[in-house]
Image (cartoon, rainbow, N blue to C red):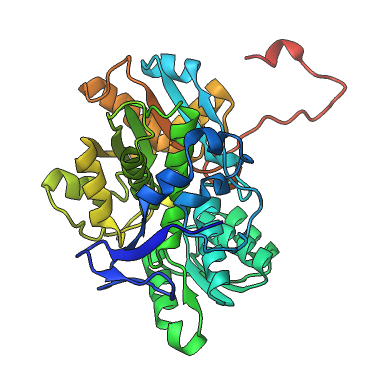
Length: 407
């Protein structure tokens, strides 16, 4: 199948770069993948896509997969878009949906980006990869790297959820715990590029994870009948998914596939324990200052400095959206209540979005009748430390006091 990639483009200044060689960043800032969208429109249409297998690779013409290249894959993509009437009623939203990324092969939305990054690394002959991670990205790279027969090095903060540590070890990666934050892990990876000869697969340090994450937007559009929602609530750490979706929507509008021209308002959600993006948004800044003493139980949100900060803030403002910080102390409770209401395995990052929706509804920035989509970026079972368990114990199974069980 033909590739429609024309070039790479520096996000910071528009510099055009070739796409047929290994690229990382330009001026230490991310790159866009650009396509011949006129040619894509002549080659494919939504009706033909609908007949393809239900994975993210159904959108191959809008992905950077080279001619004749085979993806490194576990069959990722086409996660369900679930209506949530009880959760919506409690919040006050009559049309609330959850895009449930917890059902991807590695239990989080990171499957999308790392499937694409590893596929492209494999194409370019890279055999050793390294990543700094708050948890889920490391697990995804470990799995996809193993699938491709690569050597993978993972660096994660010492207090990263134990499930994430285990899945990296189980996939055969070399895993190191770091006394520090993801930024400290990133510094280790960057300094090791020359002596270790690995490829730095940090968020937005190569152009292809973004294209994998873009498929969240492509799927959402297709599942919604090519009519985008009014509002998207997105838990934002490095922000690759928010940036990627906004890119997808722009490409779909250029292709003329959208049934209405109105674009969704993109809502970036962080914890007030690590909120560089809301702070920059409220100050009117294009670049975010690093957050000091970052802390949150939603490990995916604990990114004190995002290399794509200006891309996140540009997308929010272009869409008419906002960036919101929610109280850290409320996230775990919101997670438990939301799971109990709908049964969906919501992660704490998604719970932060639940809190944000309540606040924005009170403030009038979301209307009760608008169609709102909340992204659940990972499975609750990956965050066993988030919810303390104080379970009652039945000491004598033959003498149960049933009258007290429902109390």
